Length: 296
Ligand SMILES: Cc1cc2nc3c(=O)[nH]c(=O)nc-3n(C[C@H](O)[C@H](O)[C@H](O)COP(=O)(O)O)c2cc1C
Image (cartoon, rainbow, N blue to C red; front, side):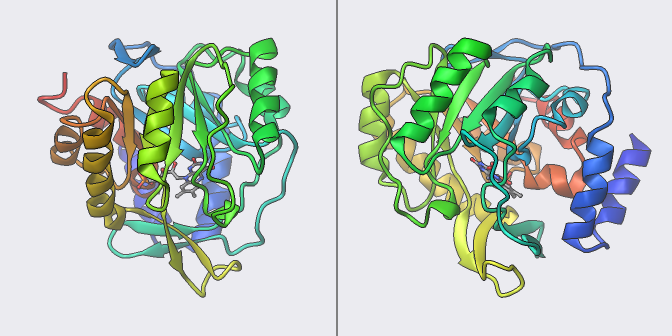
């Protein structure tokens, strides 16, 4: 793993767009999947541990096999849309100190069918993250999954900065047949989403990134992730748990890098997802976090 750590360090010194391309090459290597070391449940979803990889690292389904080598609890693939979408022009990501990022990828995806064709043979817990610009986009994709692929869970991403706040409602009549998590962000109407989620047996994914201005990105603004998100994310998680009560399953993401943070978050959440810490320190982070002392 020394080589991976060295590669991770090296990537700190190159432009994030170049680092992203280099990383894409490495992440496409088809490594063998880790043997599921532990059993963990989040709602009715079964995973290999409490710490998974968050949506956005593998948007296309090409990297899930590589990531599964590092024994994450689960891998969230996507967000997807019904059809391919190019996303924003580069630069789409920039580093922010300490250990944070701002990104405006613009929901780039090859479309749900391509993503499913790439992950369907992988024997590892995969959550599929669905995005959409309308209720129909979500419905079409859920129907597609019901016919072609049964993931361990589905995330409904209703909090992407790319929606520009116009899409807020969770489609009520979706029956995915697997655990559903609604992914909220700092600007979501938490109470309304939780009321619906609790009624439908859905869980929550807390939190997406925080919208910030950044002139380095082609979009001029993006979502803040990583260490700087942690304080805000934890506050949102506390509010979400307070409103939801103990029974609604909650998956937390937002700036988790260390065992002490993981233990703090797992007092309120049922599982955790990481992304920015993986981009800074390689996917080995997921394995180390799943082995933290004091984490069941
Ligand atoms: C480059 C990048 C792309 C992302 N893409 C998505 C996405 O497609 N769908 C989604 O629900 N969240 C997306 N996210 C948000 C992450 O899943 C996660 O919620 C957020 O980054 C906070 O976790 P972190 O601080 O561990 O990165 C993305 C984040 C980053 C940094």
